[in-house]
Length: 182
Figure (cartoon, rainbow, N blue to C red):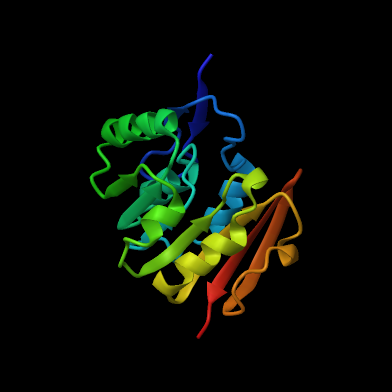
């Protein structure tokens, strides 16, 4: 049995995409994804998106389906990266770049300004603060940052310029939408 995620809205609505069976790999739940993209409805069009810990690709592919201009995906796991490459080809998503390395390695090489960032690392690695600090310089003013965790978001030590504007939870998933202020 293959793992699959379903695109919820936009151009690829109802498309299913396979992903690898890897410990700790869990797509953002449909209900949380639906809430997130309702929050971003007016801000996703033509956005430059950074998906720091891509995993299944649920957030990045959903963003592309809903009109993001470009998505940069970062996934260090070779097995899952092959699924992502196949899904990018399947969807003919030419505006999607996949980097097969850790976010820490790739963030040192990027020099793009992003309008939307997904920060959803594997919970067990506790990378929120480290990745937030590395990504912060390339996040545009007034950009949105989606953060997903298995604990109260106030425990994550995120940059003080990130103001939480929305929050939701589903089971153990805590999710927040932040906006970068100067």
